[in-house]
Image 1 (cartoon, helix red, strand yellow):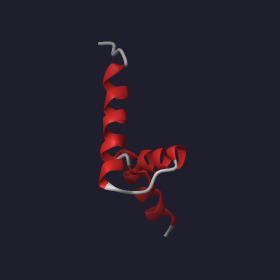
Image 2 (cartoon, rainbow, N blue to C red):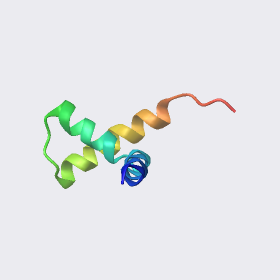
Image 3 (spheres, rainbow, N blue to C red):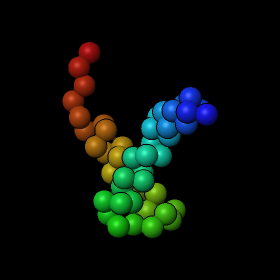
Image 4 (cartoon, one colour):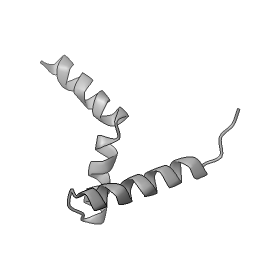
Amino acid sequence: MRFWRTILAILRELADENAYRRHLVAHGGVNTPEEYRRFQTEHFKAKYQRAKCC
């Protein structure tokens, strides 16, 4: 059972579900389509503004 919880936690991290939950907590938001769109915009903007090497 612990193995499956670990796998599920890894999948949630890879799918940005955990990041979205942290976003909701940090901004005091409620899970709505508009809030998810806001999260996606901020998340991708930050992701693609970072300089990449190689």
